[in-house]
Length: 568
Image (cartoon, rainbow, N blue to C red; front, side):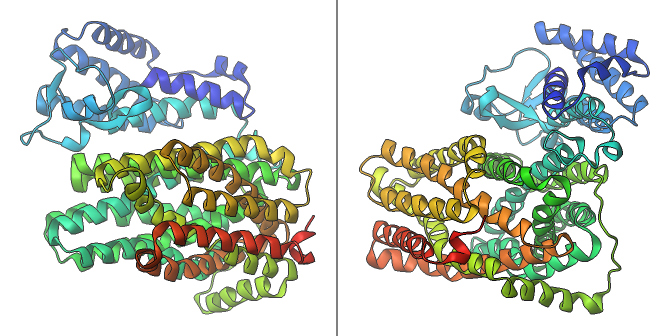
């Protein structure tokens, strides 16, 4: 994993504008020990029957070299990861693994003294090989992932100019944007883990559908309710600082949940921690959108927003799938992985350099800041027209998001929930693929159109795709339509975010985004709660088609509104 991480870091470092010749200036303390440790690891890789002490010696050598080079970005992660692996191996006389997980990704069953089967007697199961990665056909430990990430960061950061020297470039291929992008991807990866792990723990303890639904609401509602406040806080303390402290806060809150569950305290205390973590997320999200104009020049905003949207969709799918498997394997310990993602994000954000005007933060002025963000949104003809139009046009989003699984189960899986889950995973992956392709292809074309017309076109096509999905005759056709839906989502999302960024002063951007997120989520909540009930009354396919028709009609009506249509 270390070698793979290093190679990926070199490739990504060059892709983000780094100079490969800087590798010649990298020096490592105790590098001869690293060579010996690498040889030991290579030997055990090719001959799994070598004695266990040789495995441990290889890890120990890597840990010592990483500790000796603590100042290098990523070295600390390598030291922690190798120590975690050594602990699991030492306490279990080998690295524990789950044969079912190995089989699920089509990997070869490991052999030799290095591996033992994971069972009820395994110590530190959280440190075992419990993270399946399908595309790599392997099952890895959390320590392996930390080692790979640390190996990635060392060359990735070394190849870049310093963030201080790079702060004024405002390009996609820059150290600053690379740090921001990687940090927010890692942080977003952790978001579904909290929801899934909390749901799992709650149902295990209560066997109550009502309390489990309350757990989901506890983790997700803060983003809807506190968006107004979150944006105001981010503007008041600065977007970089808001993202950094949001992640640090979530590290502390989420890491406290497993000890509380182990102590069998009332669930209300766990819900409070999850709720507070959600509030921190409500500060992080508008800050994340607001910081982009400070990192990227105006003409590159669409490309930057496309990249963020593509990574969001990919991380949502991969994160949710990984979270489900991880929670099923290690239970409450999954919260620690969630906390770890926020910690790594915070480390990256701490190195980010953003030129922002400092503001004094006063709690007494917070409500005024909240009102100022909403007032600015309301006073701007372009932004308010865009907001009202988007709220109406996006009514189909919560409908398709919540009822697509039901449609797939009933129409293509013969009411088999297990088969339906597989089909739903395929549809989500198709959406992510379409979004990634759209984010790679569309920014150049969007730049040639007026943003208002691109926005309207995106909603027109999205409404048409949702109607077509409701009428899809076969699952392959439905998957193809879901992929096109992911593609068309880019066409309305990128102009929307770019318009908000361009028509808002930098010092108010987070407040405006916070207000927009809150209005969107609040408008979605009743649709989500009523969608299942109405779907059972009129038919899920009919409701999905009706929602798509609303989007389509709203987009057609927007062609008559100059403040929406003619935005440059």
